[in-house]
Image 1 (cartoon, rainbow, N blue to C red):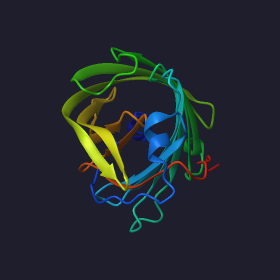
Image 2 (cartoon, rainbow, N blue to C red; image 1 turned 60 degrees about the horizontal axis):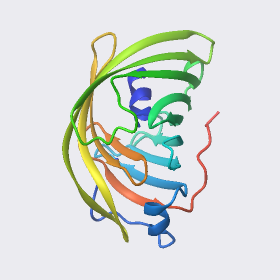
Image 3 (tube, rainbow, N blue to C red; image 1 turned 90 degrees about the horizontal axis):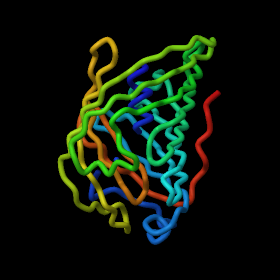
Image 4 (spheres, helix red, strand yellow; image 1 turned 180 degrees about the horizontal axis):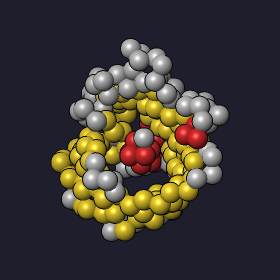
Length: 216
């Protein structure tokens, strides 16, 4: 579960994706207006991410990850991540789990991750985290991520054409367990879409949406 949370934090596409008619492409690409991206993985996992961005590199990203429709009893994860100079600094996660894992907060200190990293080069970095669960238990961990840049281009999301940087990553925790992820980063949105099985498929893009809230 811990590696899933870090993946959500670092917490991204299909030319056939649909975008609502109300989407303002100029605001999406050339302003700091909040933006929402929805996508899904090949396994049916559905994710919505919302970026409250600004030009300084300090911004907040909310994400809600929902299980496939074939697994309705699996938990929903909601994460609020705060970035400073494009680097993860703080996070709050809530889930539909009952008990100590229903809520978690964390502080993050990256080592070897440049400010406002553009994802256009290979990079290996470490992430030190101090997390506190709902029962007050605190845990310190360090993970190592090896990121591989694959390609750069554009992708059409409805009526908008966005810059897209494609990559893959392997993140190993203290116990040596590794999680592989496919990533597509949208620099104009300050958002990534990620999946474990193949590149995620974008469903929608909008500047008009309801704010994500914690589940508890």
